[in-house]
Image (tube, rainbow, N blue to C red; front, side, top):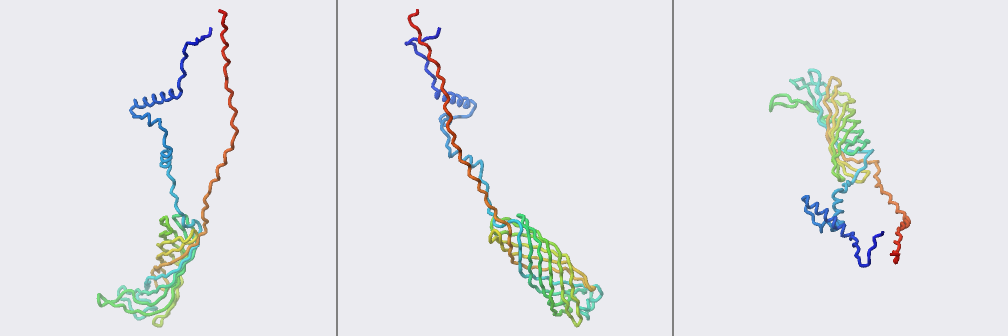
Length: 321
């Protein structure tokens, strides 16, 4: 027989779903409190502040630092011009006398077989092509410089102490031409600004052409020599635009010594400065803008699921017993 309740009998009340979940949650908090952590139920049940969550995300994932790029990388052309001052050049004679071309009447007293060429400064310039790798730059340049020969004199004085004198000094005139083809490497010091200091140096081929001149009626022959050349530079450049910059630099250059007509010439060294201009061929990078996300396509809501309704229990048949 089915269990049939009478009209006066009270049925069991249904459990409150929210109260059950809250009790279960408080029970979990109580267990956490038993483990040693103090938990405030009121605080735990309160909703979190969304601004606080956004702050935590921003701290966990900082935005990358964006640096401004002022100059293009890659190939560029360079041209510079300035002034160079050569050091006096020493010439030594291989014989017992000082070369008769310089002083026919002077004998070799002790170590006085050297002659000094007193040189004057002149124009210096170069032009070339380079490639900028970033912090490093490589250049191949052709350079020309010009100096003047002003006088010739004895390199070592004759005598002792206050009685020593230079035995001769004669005024001469002539031009010394120097042509260079040098391969150089530079290091640019990053300052995250338009100003970029740099240092560098290079080696290559130097052609030195000295003049012919006459001294005491004796002519000298002109000399044209191919020599080993080098240079060192320190400077600073300013980026006027993304594809052009100007620079100011100090230069020290040298060429190896050589021997001709029983005369030995020391190395030819000079120092000076240049101002110049670079034109860069690199294109400014274009920022890639991501395509907007496609709008979502609205789909029709699915039909509600049919709710199963149980058949009502048949009413009891009265009067059968």
